Length: 266
Image (cartoon, rainbow, N blue to C red; front, side):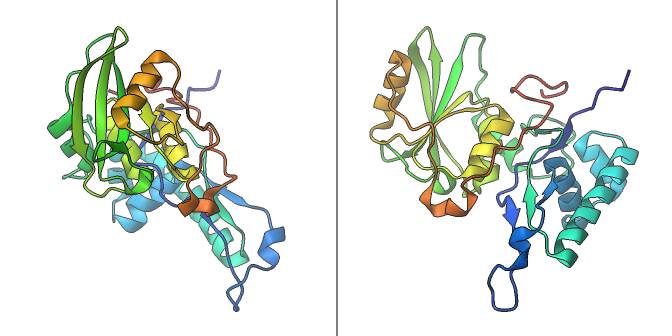
């Protein structure tokens, strides 16, 4: 019987999910006929940590909470994929893999000054049993219409079909993928927002957060409508600022399918 695959912890979902080559005139050419190379999110994370952040393989293994030999194998596969894409002109897409998004609560982060740990320490309110936590992109009482640029969320704790607590939190200008990590770090179950790109939707799915997009108007009224079961939303929402992301799947991953489905998620 094969050993179960251990979830690889990643800091946040990538903001950019696809890279396409162009010819010397800046136009796409033969690469449109070439096979797309898929780089998994955990493979991406080894590239980010080792090549960009300067981690050793051992440090990378500690951060991702897997064995060093596993990191070595993943990293070699990732480097080969990136090399093939750059040298042979293949499109490169980041999706899938065996991973879980860090929730900022682990004492083994290793990065120091982790924004999710800072958010968690600043904003985390103990989420009691039976509480559902809803976040809304927020500006001056209204639902802010571009998820990736929102500077605030209004967070609602719901119990027995009632709003029992609210809090407005600042995002400190984090990007699309990082915002999903922020929501995960504060135990958000549901997000209500306006426009949202494919990459952010994938990040939310990876964090196990249910999305209700394409909503506008008063934030408090939207949450009340959600409680009453008559919230009007668009299940096919996308953000016009990110049309290049359209058509990409959320990228299935095989561990942490829900927020509590992976060992060590807390």
